[in-house]
Length: 522
Image (tube, rainbow, N blue to C red; front, side):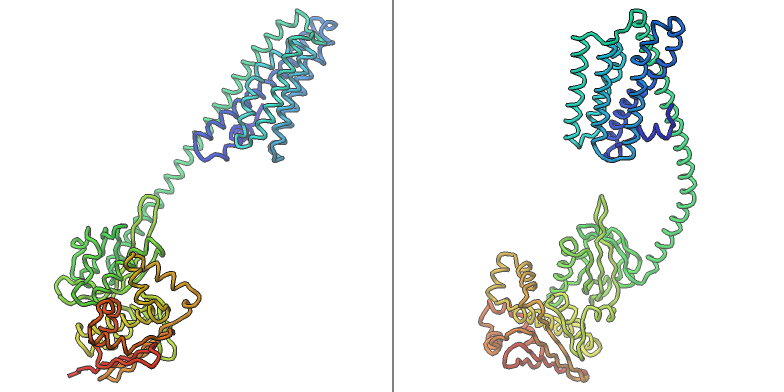
């Protein structure tokens, strides 16, 4: 009676609206109940048509005038039901369900008017249909209420007419037992049909599962060796790399490390694993080293707060050497459903990488109002001295220039006063205060420019900001007298510059500083 593809479409209709398997299973059950009702009425029509020739053979004159009123309504209902199904697949809209509900109610009412007892047969199947229709589209309450109204009106009218009015064409006593026989045959036919289609569906499902299992087995046989080969190739690349390649958990603890750490830092991977990355940042009483450490920790925190990638330059401890090794660190946050980890690599300083973060203008470096860029520029400006002075002196010069650049950004371009910085730091809110000031239209396009002259015996740095300047004479006097502790708290850049460089000079406005260092190359 029904093709298997049509049966499957009817059973699974509407299940794609749900995400969970239990909801889809409930929807399939509802569809099956509805389909049982339709199959029952189709079997009724067929059985009635098959049995009527036998009744006509017994007494044609007695039973012929019941033919139209007994069989044709069932046939008409079956055709109407088929039309509704066709429209449901071809036309979108809830009004199709309203038509279907109306067809059911009208058919019940017609049977009660014309035939009386015959309505009992169809009530056996229609009792399930209202439940199926009413919960078929649970998200469309307006359709539910409309269908409830149609069913209630149709069923109430049917029972009212059946209870209080005589049918227009009552069944003769000889036919009433035949009604019971038809009911029994219909139920048996429904059970056979339903069992057949369920068996057919399960059989096809098992065949599909076997086919998918075989396909998956063939796929795994081809994919697993490729994955193993790719893993070996990846492990070979990682282990043979000159760069340190590692992973950290979200707390910053090493969970993997390749062998390059032995060459760069002197530690074996086993000595690194399980320890926090900050344990290996070089630290001393040198202010510049303290800034390096703080910058690295701040970059790590920002991985989770802002960007998922970051890079910075930091001095790392060596196992067998008191001198640190400067590494360029790249970190990338990797998020998955069940965990977050940080993938990192570290390598010796590559000047080309640093230059990509800076804009060079006719021999002058220009940076935005970024502390990170100030750190990079300080490294770049002092790299020319690597072979001319010792490491300690280089660190002092680098730290002083870094602080001067930061002063040019904070107090020059962003016009942050000592009082504003002190108040923000007291509230532990200086980072947010700094970011807000960066975004203001008045300040965000300002730049800090730095250039240098190096002749082998002397180096000259000139750093200029776009700010209004300041009282540099008073600042230098306070710095030299060491009288103002609050000033020293914020003016350590100038204090470091005075102690490190042989000459410190400002222009008249105070937005340009010139630093001169005589080098001892003996």
